[in-house]
Length: 228
Image 1 (cartoon, rainbow, N blue to C red):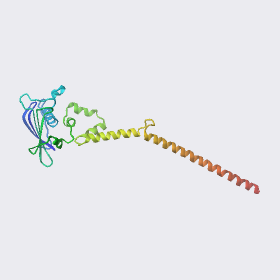
Image 2 (tube, rainbow, N blue to C red):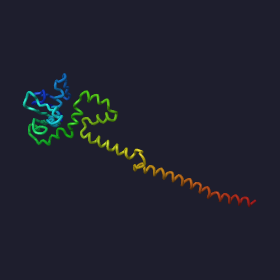
Image 3 (cartoon, rainbow, N blue to C red):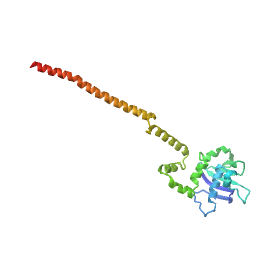
Image 4 (cartoon, helix red, strand yellow):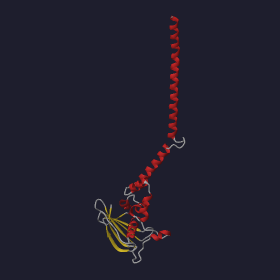
């Protein structure tokens, strides 16, 4: 899925405005308060719902002051060149959602065809950058940075990264030498004890063979002496 158009009915400072994203790479620039962040928040709101009017969330609302309409549309182009349109306007909860596939209205549940497992948090972590986000990179160690890079634009990445962390933690519980409670550590100690016991037994066998041979040698020596 590729976002190709944003049509804003009314969202913050943007009213009756369209943005065309047909090109593969799109650069949005402008001075402070030009509306760059507002556009990003519009895309997020159409995809995942408007902020509520309760608590601190009320400061994240973008109801326009110069228009009675609140909301708009996002148009996506699929791999088969069909178009999917998400329309969200002011309404109960996070807004009134309507979904279209090639101009034909379809059930809202098909929104997953567009966003897949992508979440609101994923959007904020991968599409919204400010000074705080950028400079936070310098606080990551090598493994954390690698994890962040791997999680960008990978479907299901959160799940398999969590699985990898779980497997790593399980391996540490098995292999880490913290006392003798871990099954592997106990088995390793048992193995070491058996090897030591085997070595001791083999030494006893060597001594036994030497003692067994010694009487025969003494008997042979006595026989030789008696012959003289």
